[in-house]
Image (cartoon, rainbow, N blue to C red):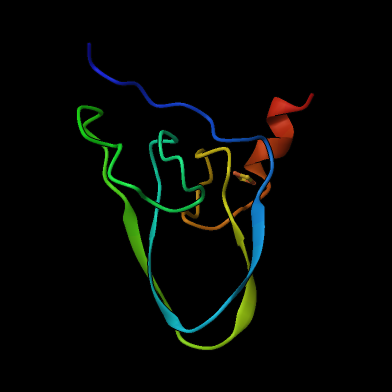
Length: 81
Ligand code: FES
């Protein structure tokens, strides 16, 4: 059976990041949120690759509905109403 898109959570994953290349899970099926673990197979969706240049705190979208993925833009708040 084909896997479907799912919400990971209705809030961002706020993480302290080190410089590097990260694959943000766009389909919500990864068990390593907010990052890809390969479980997007069969969803037709793919991770978004983001390069973090410097150490900083990042709010990775957890609802998978942000208009500015892979980052939270506040869209998740409409799911809490
Ligand atoms: S968690 Fe998706 S927009 Fe905030």
